[in-house]
Length: 271
Image (cartoon, rainbow, N blue to C red):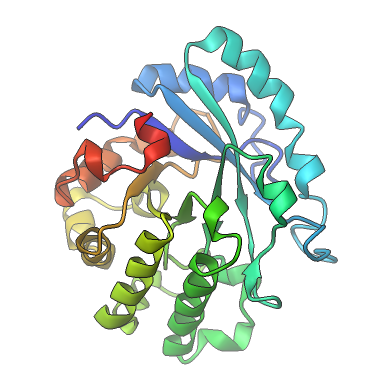
């Protein structure tokens, strides 16, 4: 299977993408090198209309902020030969136990990613131990996302159950979620037509043997057995050489391990 899409890319509008190479134009140039024909831009966002994100990372990353990318996408779309999509990685709000989004704002995007695993920002620090509590937080967040009234606007769960910036090896958390819980979560995602993201950024420090043995492979196999669709993302925060897109080969390793076919991809990447 040819993997010709990347639907998880950050530009300089994401505060964590400090590299000034992170522009639509530079990513399009890199996409052509990789043979990608579809790029989705997913800057971090918190819809202030849902609840103000006062005093944290998201305070300035509201819809008005990320919408600045529209003009750059429109300009590059006309001349690039690559299909470009305006999306976002909108946060999970643990206070409301819902997506940090309103329906009106959701309708402005071509697609939407929501993570259940930004625990370094969204989870109380005391939940890190015992680790089972950390795992349970991600399970509960996943279920809140896929059962939200806004779930119909969600394209995929970003890097599911992969605890971002975890202070210990995040691979310790996957076995703490039971197969029954995984199946419950993935069946619910399938019922709400929400895809599961295969995010290559979590494997860039691994060799092939480590990827094959990684506990996420079991998790993704369960998702496939439950009928979930998939989408690939690099989680790129830079278009520079040596950064995430140089590891695009990992996408093919994941596709091979999961025996994915075109029919296993979610609709937006098959159009």
